[in-house]
Amino acid sequence: MNNLTQMTRLEVIVPARDASAIRELITSAGATGYTSVSGVSGIGHHGQHSGALLFNEYDTLTMLITVLPQGKADELIDAIRELLSTSSGVMFVADTYVSRPEYFQ
Image: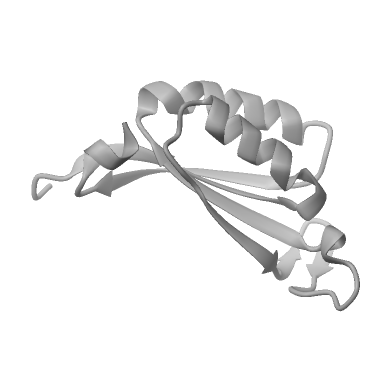
């Protein structure tokens, strides 16, 4: 595929109070970085979630996105699944392709 390298992309949406635990898992898995989007809104299993709350950022949702090699992804996926078994949130996992794989090693 046009000299692209296959990697694994994880997107995790959790309450802001749980985002730091996900960040720690991502870092400990050896990911070279992540993107964090706060104030995520939408509707799902637990109903509607507003994007930004005026006085309480702690109750908003945060989406964390990371890309890493498959060899590093499996352990991270298991760790996030374990964390989500006791809290609310969702994780999406997909194959993705990157043009500069050295950024993600």
